[in-house]
Length: 315
Image 1 (cartoon, rainbow, N blue to C red):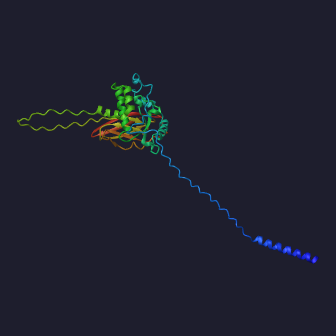
Image 2 (tube, one colour):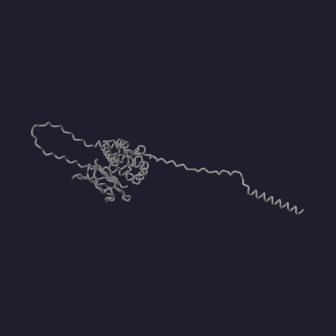
Image 3 (tube, helix red, strand yellow):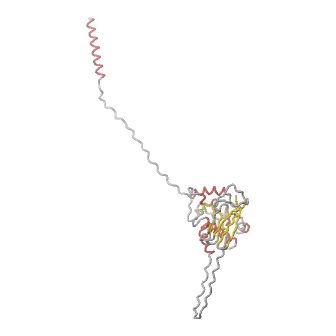
């Protein structure tokens, strides 16, 4: 009986081993899950930023009326011109310091879309000039004006001085000059040219031909035109004058210390253009002694020489 029980045990163990081996080699028929592939996120290109439009725009030498409408000085009225703008040196006394003007120029160049251009190509100019009773510091009366061009600062300086003389001589009312300068100084410039144009000489009536013999007479040479000279604008770093076209001119700046400036821009002799305008722009220094200096312009045409002086202020 014990032998039989041992055989049964061996049989059971063998069957268990066989079943275990078969289970180890069984292959599952369940399908594998399909792997999930994440969708790639492609960033969209950024929309280009449109260029910003400057808030102010100048056209044909005129400032933007919305940005620079002009402003007047309350101290200057028709009743006070004899003790304000018609006094020599008045404008120089109230002109703002260069530090204020230069800082405002940079700000307004950005506003007018000139940020990429050289500040030296512009003058921070008063729309209504100080000598016409314009406000010295109000930004509404200042804008960056190009120095060169057909309608630039040089032409405006000339009409400012002419209008000043007209007002002080009683030929133009102060308010009229201020209004015309603020609305369209180019139109006022053209009116000035018409007012100062030299009238054409009258043509003598024709003389009936004579049968009598005539004797030849030597022709009388025409007199040479008189050489005139006037300084139209005088400020530290710039001077312009009006004379006859073709005149040869030079300029000198005597500083408040009494020394003569040797700055670049004053050295060359210049020839007045077809309109008779000649100008110099020269370098300035922040270390120059403050006070009043003097510009001297000398022009020569043929054998005639003329000189003119004008003060300027160093802040």
